[in-house]
Image 1 (cartoon, helix red, strand yellow):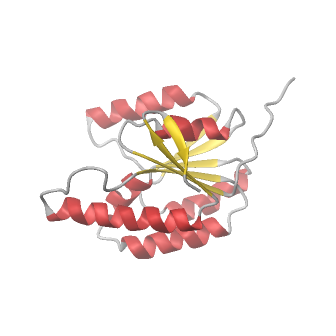
Image 2 (cartoon, one colour):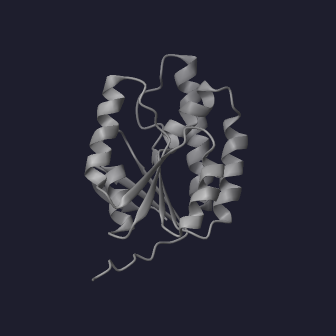
Length: 175
């Protein structure tokens, strides 16, 4: 029986892009055909999100083990690294929104995530929305979200071995 050749990934890759840019599919392809873990931060709170999650699951197929964790991503990564499989965290943007909605300190949680990531023995690919490519929001909560996401993206990018921006399905290596 043939086994897929494992892809050699750097310890930490950040894949950024706008909404519907193809960043998640690109990140999944980075991992290749070997078994992998999909760490989802989104929750199905309405029918549209349920449909979106179902489409993502169908696209990924059976080789992925899905784990849902909207808040304590660092602890989940600590448990998941024991599988020895690469992990795809999708998405940092949803995680930041969940943290803000729960009254958590995003900067402190991001620092804890980076500390955990630096000690992982498995490869990690993080997907995030690029902040600030659109108009400045007209409400304080949306501006607070973009500020927090932008700061989290910058912190993760500084710690990452590889950073890729995806636009219109096309990757641009930033780091």
